[in-house]
Length: 390
Image 1 (cartoon, rainbow, N blue to C red):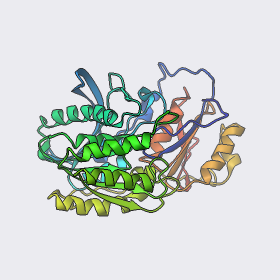
Image 2: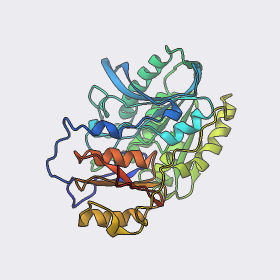
Image 3: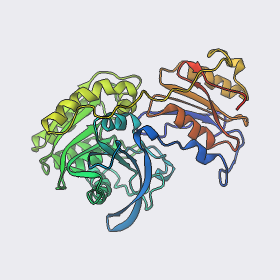
Image 4: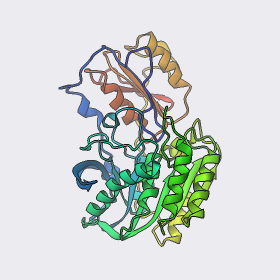
């Protein structure tokens, strides 16, 4: 992008990011700094692998993030499914769901986050069926089924204790997947599931209701759903319609309709502050299924970046390298709630983020996309962490 406008939020779980391009037409091919922006969470034993899957008759490899507790397993398993950002799915970044993953790893679970066909670095092409929500859900569930079939062959997976979850489009895929009989799957978790059609000449809301009715008639799996009062995609009235259609057809669903969450409840699952909403109800749900809920892994607090004495947080003029647009955006960053982070480079590129899985890692990755000079963190939460000597 240019310095004149922010990019859209890249993740369908809410993580608001903004960045500036220092040089128009800049190519990242061969940039020596891009890989440095990708940091794996060692506390969660994070790995990124390409999982071989047969989906819809295609042989594809799905870019997949895996978090595990210490030891060889076998571990109970959570498969967490991502949403869809606007634009080309191949341009969508790797989803990690660190907040959710952390809560489950603490309780002895392995968490697997597959990027479906055509998303991020996964091979194949994304297939969409327009306003046919049954088709959309089931096509995405093809990938999910392929991943589960692969995971059930892995010795570190407890094949008899599996939970499938998803957010936004991943929630729709999860509920569609519930119509399939995969051994060991005990229940489903739906975080604001659905697919919103932008600019489509169809009634996508009625199509979603029809799809949930169809899925409810074909599943025996219990599920728990989370939809917030100020969800900008699927509001309370639509969430209630989806639940009623699902349950009236024979599906088993508990709808947790909670109040307003920050600026948009659609991103609740990706926020640290959302844990207090979804975990207590999820804990009850898991106990009913005979799944573990006690903390068995001692995880230290999330790593904190050390504050420096470079400048006071609100001293906009002290921030190095920024042009006028960047300084305006730094002021905007200062108005945002925690967690948040701001990064920049000597080329004048910058990025800021609020909420989401990991704002510091996200801003470094986004800033690096527009800079051949290395990006560094300037501020995290309420502290300046910039060190001009590094």
